[in-house]
Length: 228
Image 1 (cartoon, rainbow, N blue to C red):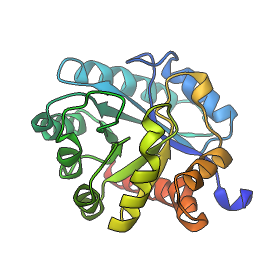
Image 2: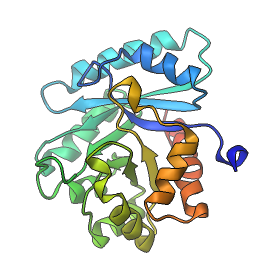
Image 3: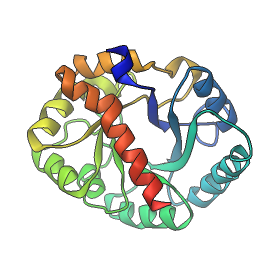
Image 4: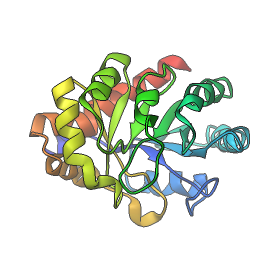
């Protein structure tokens, strides 16, 4: 099974450009040393800091491309705590500014996210991932499936409370799931084996858990590559 799992892909990570504690370069080096296949730096943004965060992150990536990292590094954003009507506007702007990945901070139980955020995210063409979507509805999962938005099973404390509900509802709707950490500090790293166990613990069978930690992340990486 270990060979079938492949290498770890984590597409939701925060650096000190928002509320993480590590430089993007340190996240990349630590992930590389752990044998990861790919990471995405997706710092929190709203109207106030989108341009600044992306310019800094893209500067890091441009420099990283000059060196021989044994890991794929992507730059994106996590649109966070904005009115649902602003999500399409910010997602489009992020793309124009060079974001390779657009994540939206979903309606987790542990934060006062504005109702309607999940629905806006799964109906916005530029959004790739709806993170920790809490008590997401079947209708929202169906829209995510039809619009190609991936739904996150989170390893993060608090956000993970609804993983079982997300997994059941997404599978019923034919949605695609990813296991991400919502990384903020070194102790948040999760191995591929543990990510697989977390997917199983969310109620997925082995085949579905394998898709969540290997097939769907690699599928999304391919889509990102096609957009560049």
